[in-house]
Length: 356
Ligand code: SAH
Ligand code: SF4
Image (cartoon, rainbow, N blue to C red; front, top):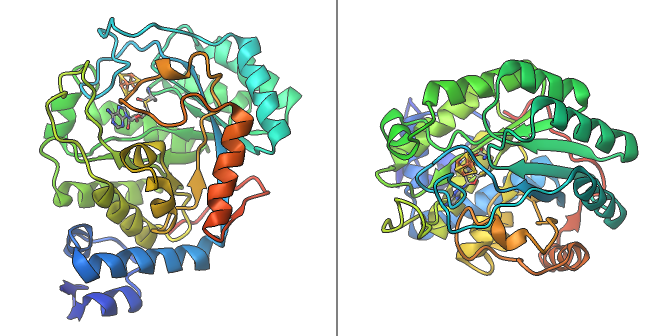
C-alpha cells in the first residue's frame, strides 16, 4: 500500500516508521490506514502497540464504571436506554448507593470512578453537585462524569464541585448520519457541549461508534480530524452493536477489526491520549479488550455497578461481566492485564496535557 504524506508516496511501513505519528492528521493517510488489511493491518496494529509502549508505558489504568441511572430523556436510534423503550425496567441508584460503590472501588485500588447515566434530569445540577462533593470529601478518587448533554451553567457547577473529567462521545461528526440516528439531538449543540467542557478545564474525553449505518472510513477520518482540533485527551470508541428494541435492530453493526484499526490510528494521531479497550469490544469478541490493549489502548473501564441493576443498563445487547461482583471483576481484569505482560496503573492516570 502507498500512503501520501502530502509530498511523496511512502510504503505502508515507511509511513509508520517515518513518523506520521503525532503529525497533523490528514485524510490522505488516515483513510488508507483505516482501510488497511492483511500484512498492512498487522503492521498498523503492531506499530500502534509499540508507540503506546513508548509514550504511555506498560501500565493499564483502570477506571471503575458506575452506571447509576438508566432513565433517559432521549431517543437515540441505536441505544436500548432510549426513552420510548418500555421493555426495560428503569432504575436509579440512591446517593448512598453511589457513595458505597465508590468507597468499595477505592478500597479495591481504583483511583478513578466514572459516573455514567442516561440523560436523567432527576440528577439535576444541584443533586449531582451534592454527590460530587460527597465523593470528593470521603474519597481521594478522581471523578469522571458521563451524563450527556447539559448546559454551560450545569457543567461549570459540576466542575466547581470537584469533577475532574468528562466523557461525551460525539458519536459521528457527519451531519447526515448524526441527524439520521438522533431524533432529538443536534450535532452543533453536542459539539458546543464539548467546546464548553474544554473551556471549563475538564480533562476531556470524546469518541465515536464504528460501523454506524452509512458510515465510511472517510467519515471516521473526519471524526478524527475534528477531535484533533478539539484537543481531546481521552478517546473512547467501540463497535456499534444493534439492539432489538431500537429502530436500528436490522443493521449489521461494527466489527472488532474496524474498531481495532481505529484504536491504532487514534494512537498514531494522539500518541499521549488515554484510549480505553472498551466493553463493547469485549462483547463482540471474548478477547476483544486484550486485542485492543495490544493495538494501542492503555485503559480498561471495569463495570462496578451493583450487580442487581447491572443487566438493566442495556445500551446494547449481550454486555459482558453482568454478574461479576466488583472485586471479582477487579481480579479478572488484573489477571488479563498481567497475562499480556502489562501492569495495572497505580497512579491516577490523569491526562497528559499535550496529547498530540
Ligand atoms: N447518555 C450519555 C452516556 C451514556 S451512553 C450519552 O449518550 O452520552 C454511552 C455511550 O454508549 C454512547 O456515547 C454511545 O457511544 C454508546 N452506545 C449506545 N448505544 C450503543 C450501541 N447500540 N452500540 C454500541 N455503543 C452504544
Ligand atoms: Fe440516552 Fe445516551 Fe442512550 Fe442516547 S446514547 S438514548 S442519550 S443513554
